[in-house]
Length: 308
Ligand code: SF4
Ligand code: SF4
Image (cartoon, helix red, strand yellow):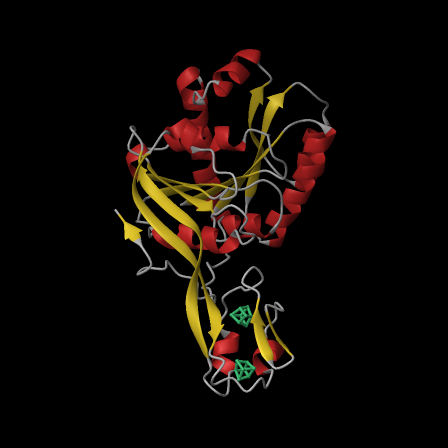
């Protein structure tokens, strides 16, 4: 089962929830994916020992000027304006290239070959409790988070009976869509404030568009008003857990402690959360969305460098 833990807004406690949920499920059969590749931070809580490292990226076009006739066909077929022909020269903009391969396929002179462009790194290893932990790390200055997330999701195939917890980036942009896509259930973490409600609405709409079942966790309960509750009731989103605003919790998390370890009374609550999710998924509200195969030829650039 794949559970995505998301929030429309940063700082709601999404990683706190995701990491405690991972510990509440049987750790030896749990995989934790930190999909927040621009700012991964779940390793601070779960403290894995990374033993696998693999560079990932895209295959981008490289033009052989000897063969190129400047016909412009490559620029015509590029949907991302990543390749242009100017004054008889072909210019490639790697930061815009999605590695789709259309330009290579459509070049009548066979003048384009594809070369790897490294975007970042995947790292994997086990935590002391036995959780398999993997994260993507986008290189500084790289704008393309989605290929790293896509490769992170595909890095280790999901085994029968395994539970995968995906810690989704904040917001509702493309990296969030990619992190949620293919999940069986989405946990939306929010806080009962006007900002929290605003971003919850956006996240809930995204999940609805992807036709995924979802439930809500209200973090820092008690600091705001009842508008989040009212919205959840109207939207048919179950509130699956509430975590009160508590200075002791904030201090423990600030020191890098896991919620279920600092406050063991939360362990059965997270186990109950997982049981609720299983019930909802097994009741047939699981995702009908099939994991979509990608046409982007980014792949794990095996052959560039792989270390174990
Ligand atoms: S399609 Fe091929 S030949 Fe035509 S401009 Fe592009 S690289 Fe050159
Ligand atoms: S690989 Fe795709 S996105 Fe990149 S330049 Fe070619 S057509 Fe454009």
